[in-house]
Length: 376
Image (cartoon, rainbow, N blue to C red; front, side, top):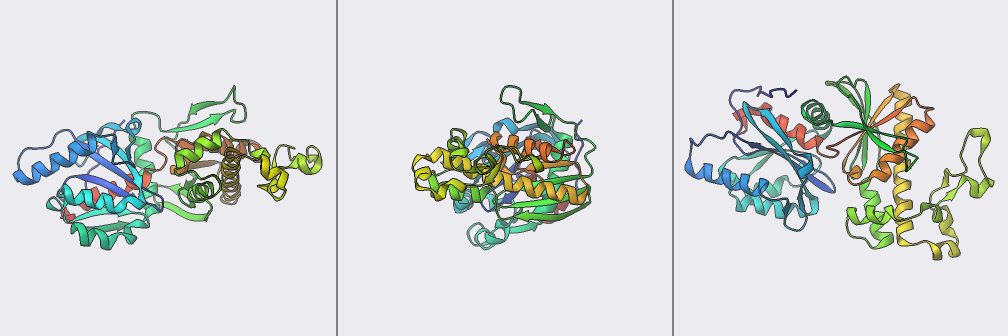
């Protein structure tokens, strides 16, 4: 059931309405496309607004690297007294200057003097927006935006947002199952972007960052580029899906000859990531695909281990994994699902959300609406 999102200030901000999350690797945009825009107002401004709207909603790809995730579109949303659709767009942060040039070419500054942004890039690129587009950036905390975005999208998505993997260690029986997340508290959220932040969430307004690690999605992509010569995240994941990490990693059975029964360690558990790579003969038989898979398993296992320890410390049974690291990455999702269930004896459940890395941008859009016409 959609909930009307109203502004806390008088009036509404100038259109277009979007939230921007500028991460270390990816920039995410959430754009609200109104279905009932008035034709009253300045003719030049209206024409500029139509141009931006047509460009953003009339394309699936923008240049060589920008993508609109059509499957994530949320229609029939009620925001700021208007009805419309939410669109989700991403592009590499290293292409930010192209985005700034696009904003300049579409005359964005004729509509507004400021935009809302979150993420580290909101600070890094602040002077570029001011210099090249005459736009001020209103900056909001990325973790505050993350929690607000999760809360809004889960409650207003007409499709099911939350799910888990049943039988994640069995290829034939594994299935994606809907999970009712309407009463989620307390839960742990593990945000896997370039790095990882872990938050304990006890209510919409009671949350804190409890841990994190620098070994995240950016680490996986960087190492894969070094080890395999790949160029993109999608290519790295594709290579990993065809690889065999046991040709690279040293397993418990490689050391014990089987299971380590005293501590319930399966012989197939990883004892040493990349542990075989000190031997030339093992390096010679390890393919680029094997290296990609071992890199993915290494990063994922590390994240899962830290998440589990945080869940135990915070006494939480639900662990929600989000972030663009999980995009097109069912390998890691199933690894995380299995690890949470196995090492907790079934007491921890790994949950996932369809909109993965867009929650910060969504939260930023909500902050824009809360500012009302004060952003002019």
